[in-house]
Amino acid sequence: MKKASISSIISTALLCFVFWLLITGELAALIKGEPSVQVLAAGAVVSILVACFSARFFIHERAFYLLNPKRFFTLLFYAVIIFPIELIKANLDVAFRALNPKLPIKPGIVKVPVDLKSEYAQSMLANSITLTPGTITVDMAEEDGQLNYYIHWIDVKSQEPKEAGDAIKGTLENWVRRIWE
Amino acid sequence: MRIAIDILIGISVFFAFAGTVGLLRMPDAFSRMQSSTNIATMGVLGVIIGGVLYAIFILHDSAMAIKLAAMGVFYIITNPIAGHAIAKGAYKHGVRPKDPMCVDKYGEDLVDE
Image (tube, rainbow over all chains, first blue to last red; front, side):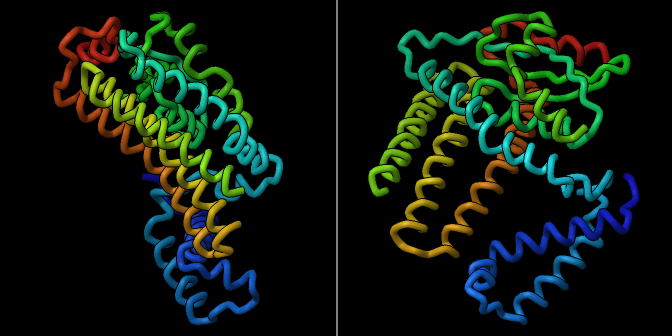
């Protein structure tokens, strides 16, 4: 377990505070220009306390990384345009597979090499793959310095690690690398 | 605007239906999970986006819209982690498909460890 630095505590507290604003509905009050000072103060105290305890689990490398506007907008572009397109394609594919009377599936677990260094990038790619219907990341393991994902795939088109990786990851890996590295 | 909202909700109902049919028809646990991500992504997102539009343009209630959007974001962040944990737990616990999978690299590598 890495130790929490001051910057990671600050960024965790900021994130907690933003979610406090969202969930208590204070953001709408702020827009209208009539914020309640009590709610804001309580939120600030709670988010700083929570951040002190949980920052080391949450953010421990390069805390203010996403404040770089170029990276942030790349992330936004990925989350709003690139990923939903992949999501809709995969959704249609799996939906028609399930409704097809012949049930054309060929499940298997393939091994896919991944070249990402940052922990955030690795978990983001793994979660993107899991969220896409048709593929679930079962585990990730390092072997001879090469990181591998084990992915359950509903329609195995190729058993070769490289080809399977190209078919599953598509352009996602490059986008994730552009965001985090 | 009302029509756009109805179309969005209709799309998500279609995907939820396909996901449920898949859940009942798929032969083994892992394939069932694959089909249920159908419901979890397009099924839920369509309803949430439709709900946000409804809150903004028909109810004129921005607090409700913001809460719905926050729900969507949390859903997208937490759902894959749960799916991954269930799949890994099932595999480690010894759940295997009745018909052997066409390739099982994870099982082969687990034996080596």
